[in-house]
Length: 270
Image 1 (tube, helix red, strand yellow):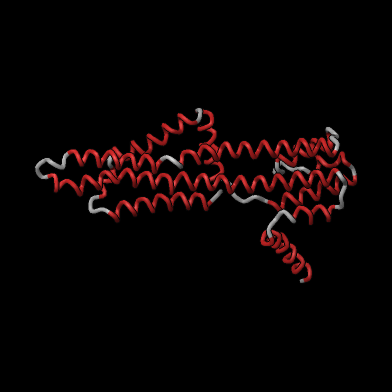
Image 2 (spheres, one colour):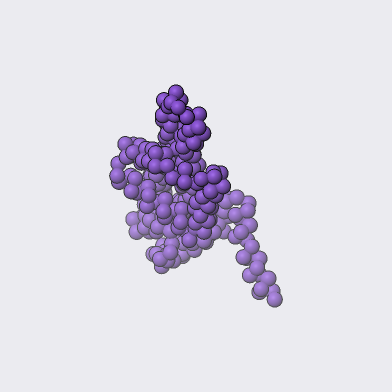
């Protein structure tokens, strides 16, 4: 489970609640349905006009899975699996499927099927895996586009709500006692702007950024798998494959893989 995503969601709610309760003598002013309906309803309306129901439903399911689901990408476990596949392929290509587990990444399983069962050449294997990777990038871009588009409109609808509130206020300036209503009326008008900024900056923009981060990690993992399968096809030495695939990782990520090894060696020495 992604505890960072859950903690971030709770923090966003807490920040919004604290801002409401601490900034006004009468917090009930933030319960103004005018601003809520205009910002939330307007954003939903724009989403319905921009995308179909299927795209919106898929975007909702994906953001639930990626925001609250397991976040960590197991680069090192994937590299070790590819090394095991390489060793098995050098001994006997038919033994490669026995190396795979139920938890093995689906892209590895697809690559092994193309490699062993279909017997594709290097060029054919490269074309298929590259096209699959390209398709994954395109799907991720479509998913991110939904949330990126939605994040652009709440501030605009908030400003629209403030504009309508100011118009309503200016119409009554000539009435008796209008000076006493200016402050409360302006506060009510700015509630819509508040909700627009909150929805955009505490909800939609973070979701869009999170999806972009998760997509980048997943694409990097698939690039590692693709290069690994191609190296297995060439029957490169497993040690070369391991070091080559680790070059995709940052220095800190490489140190994470070497730390357990040093710990194990220390135990063996003891």
